[in-house]
Image (cartoon, rainbow, N blue to C red; front, top):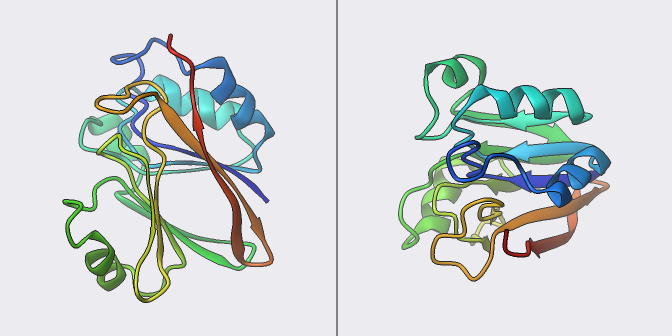
Length: 166
């Protein structure tokens, strides 16, 4: 099962549209995961129409229409892998311990908010992933997103992709 993992798209505030490479990945993926800060419902509508399956949550920059359509936390099982998605996890210091306590029956936690890519494993085995942002690099050298595979309940082939400058 192929995943595309996104967060902090901020369309149309930070970019008018998602980069073409991200759309290609979305259409090739079995599941698109979005960890919030869509900003406008139009991108949610378009991803719902173009993705085979979409799992998303709202972020702190998402208004009432997005909050009415998306949960704050999403939990799903994909091919035996227990996945949770949330926008904010708090500060980087102590993140693994804090998230392991908050998501004890989760294998992988996808989060956003910081626009900073993150890939670590907590003491209990919880893997934490932040794809960065495909539209707003902030203090990062480039805009980013993640792809991954799920094979028999295991997350494999996790890859951070950098995007060329717009």
